[in-house]
Length: 213
Image (cartoon, rainbow, N blue to C red; front, side, top):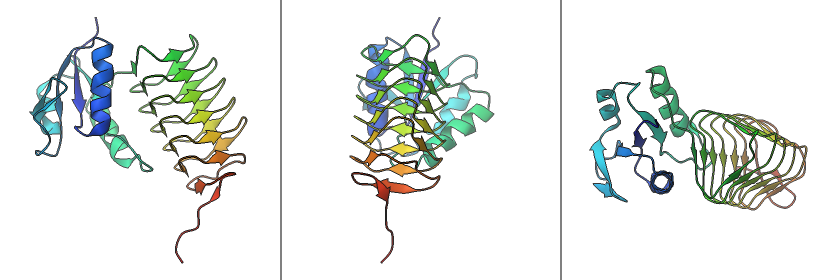
């Protein structure tokens, strides 16, 4: 039997997650948020209070769903995941019914596969990673932990990303490319060369972004 879930977070990503959970017919107890000003009700899911409410439930009685999004910085989302895992809680892995995921794909704990995503054979996806709306992940890609593949992004075959990577909306990474840990690929970029860890790239073809002046 699938355990009921609590969604952590109350922003836009949490709403997308809640909609997907409804589609999956998973029972949602409620959601938590550090911001007391969030709406009391979201798509029929009540606000329970701050994140400490989770501690009122035994770790083996529920699963958590990470509703914290990430745009170029996975720190907050990763922090939530690691804090509650250290307390013995587990995060539900969620696949939207409209997604196409090959039968041999390995999805880590807490992975979220959103509407319209395609993940082809031989892929591995690390823990707490978001494959967002309409993303395409072709064969034998290896995606690191705490990564965000944003809406409409395309990873061709044999792409490898490190942990904490952000691939922006509509970006394309061609086949056999390595994208280093904690790097950011800007929206709409086309990556044709390896991206070093901690680098931000943009453009067609993608080049390191110049900061300062």
